[in-house]
Length: 228
Image (cartoon, helix red, strand yellow):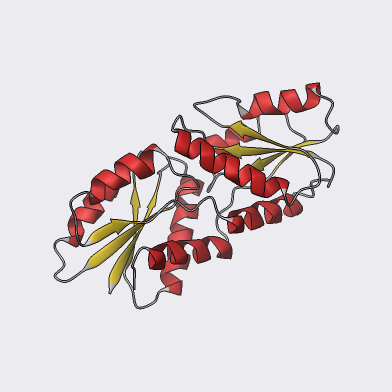
C-alpha cells in the first residue's frame, strides 16, 4: 500500500496553512486505509525531501508525491524531482494542472463572487519564470476562455509580467467591458491572494481550496502514478 505525500509550496499565512491542511485532511478521508502526509518545498516544514527520506524507515512502504501546485515549474521539476531522485520506492506525480476540473472550481468561485457575465477576467496565477509553468497557465486560460463569455487575460502575482495589476490596467485601457474581475488561480489564502485585492479590479474571487474537485484531482494523480 502506497503512502500519499501531498506536497504544497508552504506559506507563513495561518489561514493558508490551515487551508492546505484541510485539503490534506479531505484527501485522507477519501483514502481511509492509506497513510497521507503533508510536505512542503519552501517556507516551512515538514520539507518534502525529509518526508521522502522517512519512507525508507518503513519496511515495504512505497510512496507517491502529489504536488499541491496548480502548474509545473521549478518546485515540481527541481525540488520534488530531486527529493525522489534515485528512489525506486517513491515517485512523483505531475502538478494538479492543467486540468478542466480546476476551471470548474474557478467558475464556482466566479459565481460565488457574483461576477457579471460580461466582465473581463484576469486569471491570476502565482507566476514562474519556468516556461513549462507559463505554458500550463496559458492552457488553463484557454480552458477558461471556452467557458466564459467575455475576454480572459492572464496576470501574475509575482515574478513575471504581466502582473495582475498590469493586466487589470490594460483591460481598462483597451476598453474591454467596464467591469474587470480577477479570477484567483491560487490554491490558498496568503501573500499572493492579498496582492490580488490590491490590483484595482472590481471583483476578486477566492482561492481554489478547499473544494471536492481538488480531492478528485489529487486522487487521480496518485493512482495514475501507481499509488494503490
